[in-house]
Image (cartoon, rainbow, N blue to C red; front, side, top):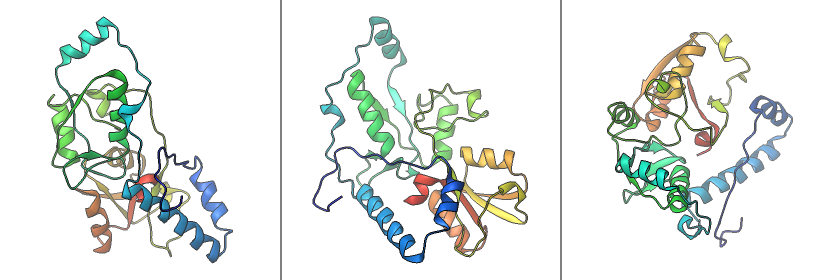
Length: 238
């Protein structure tokens, strides 16, 4: 994408088979890997610079709600939403306090097509967002991963995004093919995430350290408190 071009709509194709991709990349030489890495970083820079001109409100598609559906929404009161304040590029609040990211764009599109308004609540962190939802203080937790624990108090839509999760290691670490076979390894995760719930359930062989924010994940690694962060592929690329 040339630097002077404004992006109207962008799509990122994520691999459905990350292990197969890892095997394929193992055959690339250093020059090809460096070129691919720079291209990926360039795309991420474009996303971070928010060079988009698309306005969801300008969409001509509208979905007409029935009288019963409109009455149901009105009976709910304010459509309150508590995003994760520290989940780039999906959800975050910019320097002006505006809700931003992929999730924000999708909710703007929904609001425009249904002619409704969302009211955004700013939680201190993701743990507080979950607590607000449990207490009934907000109606919606957007882009939420579905887990058995969360199903106890939430109703989920069909999946809107499916992507792989990846372990992040130092370059010299052996390629991880079977996480269940790792021994004497500690993994660091944000508190209250679906990742924490699943790792504790599926990989009892890993020691779990939780931290309040995504930023603290890498601080914990730098302080040698943990060795393996695990994040979604999109989040890891940012």
